[in-house]
Length: 322
Image (cartoon, rainbow, N blue to C red; front, top):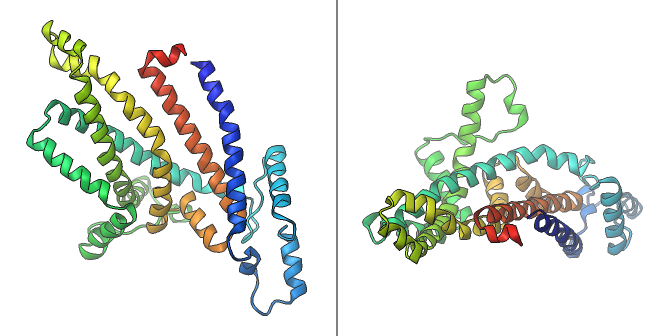
């Protein structure tokens, strides 16, 4: 298993390298000049040339990439923001806890709700509850996350005013007591977490149900029942681990979609994470921030897939022996 993990880490390096190449050249191929953000129409040509030189934009794109990659590999330097001059890595790390809190909470709730729902529907398939959950799952799959976010803001915040719209940030924590701080964080996370969780539950519960139904029809399950083993033991001891394998793969592979959805949701709910930072950087053509944002997101996705492989090895002994 250790050899398998090390191999996956080794093959992740060229993937990250390819991601940086594609991202860097695609960003620089977009129309517009990042230096325009720092200038106005009356800027003199010599001042424009000096600003572009200071930002390193006067060099060919491939030279800019080589310089960026060299600084990243040798110094761990992702560059500096073109807007405020702050280090890219420090700027992203300030926003990282907010993104991890949002995505981590969403993932945790999705897993602990999707698994029991899927198992219950598989054990009681074709029941009224199974049909209702199937109907709701198709609705959850059909609704885009950004549209659902706007709907919940309209219903919970504007129309019924049941949940205040709170945009949190480190300055807003000053002077708060512990209970007030917990309440503020809970209220600010409730709506975005709900939006991110709905689609995950819709997808994952259906996969769990399908896999569990197939597993419960295996010969060894029928043998266990013929031996008089209790139904709960059969479900949770003998059927659960084989049935959870597709779920492990799905959770790892769905992280890119969750991360992409989180970027949009962070912006809609004014959540101070790296997703909102990335969208703001796009509007400002702030290439260093965008490169750092995408690189960090890629590392997170690769790490999540690696954890999924480890979990797969736990559930399937054949992986551990490979």
